[in-house]
Amino acid sequence: MSRKNPRSDRKHIAMERISILFSQAESFFSWNQEFSHLCVKRARLIAMKERIRIPPLLARRYCRRCNAYLVPGTTGRVRIYRGRVIITCLTCGWHRRIPTGRSVRSNGKEKK
Image (tube, rainbow, N blue to C red):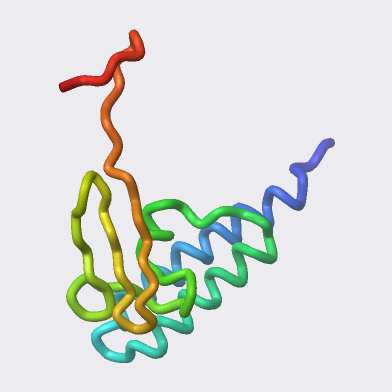
């Protein structure tokens, strides 16, 4: 019998662990912010070791420079400026700029 590739099992387990760590960071943030930052740091280390990407919805929740878990109004500021969402880390001042994007029709022209 053939078995699954053990490498894919490790990646699947790593993705589960990353999502668990981010949910822990969210739940413990009001109680202990340093623990939340540590959860994010561990999740990033797991992703780097297994060479997988953190999903975009989770990647927007932390600062890439200082590994701080970003909560709008507490550790992060969210602004919309010139068609971009700008997330600023209030711990180190790092900015993440995310384009809002325009929807494109199937014929290549953009919607108005």
